[in-house]
Image 1 (cartoon, rainbow, N blue to C red):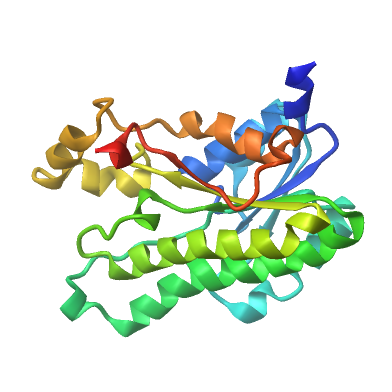
Image 2 (image 1 turned 135 degrees about the vertical axis):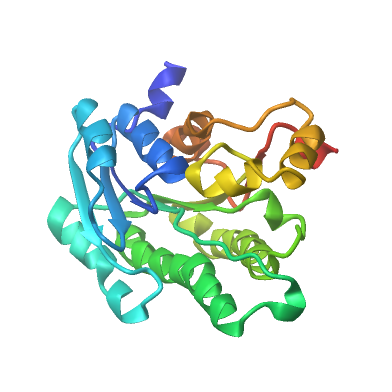
Length: 253
């Protein structure tokens, strides 16, 4: 049956940045499809996400790790496998954003943003691949953005990082697809989350963005769950190196 291809029973997914918003919605979606969930955040306190996952009858673990700290990331996947017994799915979702005119953008914030969005994503992908390659299968999913294709306003580091994730997706897919690891990327558009509140409520940018979205509204976090389950499941076994935009038609304009 075709729906069986989407089942994730018995698999373990590591999702970064799942405390709220898109990450939480994706972790919940993976749990609904049958996966046990591991989350990573600076505090390791993710009770709301834990409740959602456990309401599906799935197991849940949370690790307190600052993904912007290379030393803290070291050995993370080994710790996850030691605790859970395996790792089948990695979702690199954690991220931050800073807004400044480019001529005023602090290099310290540039470095911090690229460390979390790009370097940590590569580091965890590398760690995950070392666990997946011996088994000849695994799913790595980066969370990019429509800014993987565009420049935006006053977000040079964010745009650069999201472009980098798209390139990283393709490079890793070229390296690992023959060895059974699928590497793909989701590029969300404008979604209603706490991180986007200030932008959505901005009296100038908010209406401008809404007017440009062909379907006439911002996305809801649970509208990413079908895509994340697809990319994490056997239904996407022949998909490698793709960047899927989920944006209400934003990039079609």
